Amino acid sequence: ATSPDVTQSFILKHEMPPLPSGSQWAVVWEYDASAEEWTRGMIAIQLESRPFASGALRSAYKLTTKMNPTLYTQAFYRDQHSQYEEGKKLNLRKLPRLFGPVDSTYVAKLSKTTVSFERYFEDVKMQMMCREYGIRYTANSPPKPVDFLSAWVIEVQADKGDHKLYGLEMYIDGEFKKLNSNFGSVFGDRNTPQSFSHFSYEASAHELIIVDIQGVDDHYTDPQIHTKDGEGFGAGNLGEKGMKKFIESHKCNPICIQLELPPIGIDLNDSRNMTRVIRGTMMLPDLKPDLDPKLDI
Ligand code: ADP
Ligand code: ZN
Image (cartoon, rainbow, N blue to C red; front, side):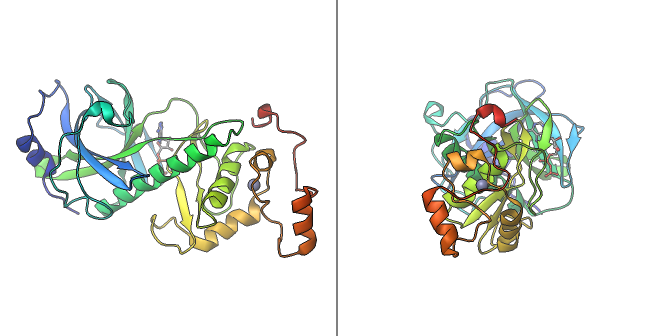
């Protein structure tokens, strides 16, 4: 896949500050999930040449920034990110402060196989949508907040005038754990990740479910969305089949009850069950005795 030489044209069109030594310019795209809008800008990066970690699909490189990104407005939506209009320079102070302070460490994720540029944008959009669900979940005062890392797409100049895209997010120190899969598997005995997936299903009126929960503590990254129609969000979107797998294996836990999520795995077409749920006398499988936050280990 190729892309227009946006980095060079950007540098020529805008008056850029001097590049800190050892840095290179990259184009950065930020997605606003509530406005469904992308913003583009420039960022000075230092990118390590060797990956520090690797998953099934992507290699992860450490990246640092030596200055705040300069963001520009740009009117493109959906699939038109490579055909944007040149926009007005934004007042940085008015932007949501998604970037960390100067000198923060980030992770740049490069696909191990050749994928379309679109894939990078879809992945970032998916994670930023999940971030909105995390904010909504946390607004319901669960024992522990859920925080999906903000993600960006960056475009970096490579050899021979070529360009590479990476997914970008903050580097999180600590033990990286996978907590559920996109096919009904549950790992470990944490309640928060499982309740969050259940929450996403209810909060979207069963239109989607967020799974593949993984990260450090409750700082999540690299999620997967299954949608009712199975459209969008890459090959990991297993549609109704994926939703069904979650429903079959999920056991509601005290956080699901606290958030008043309709119990999963109980046939509400059975009028006796419906009566029990309404009266609050439905017996749930493996229910822990109370809602002590310490129960979510
Ligand atoms: P894949 O798409 O192949 O699953 P991941 O997004 O899981 O790739 O990233 C690969 C590996 O990089 C992870 O298994 C983890 O060890 C590490 N990693 C990913 N994101 C972060 C992060 N934000 N902070 C620290 N380490 C990370
Ligand atoms: Zn539940």
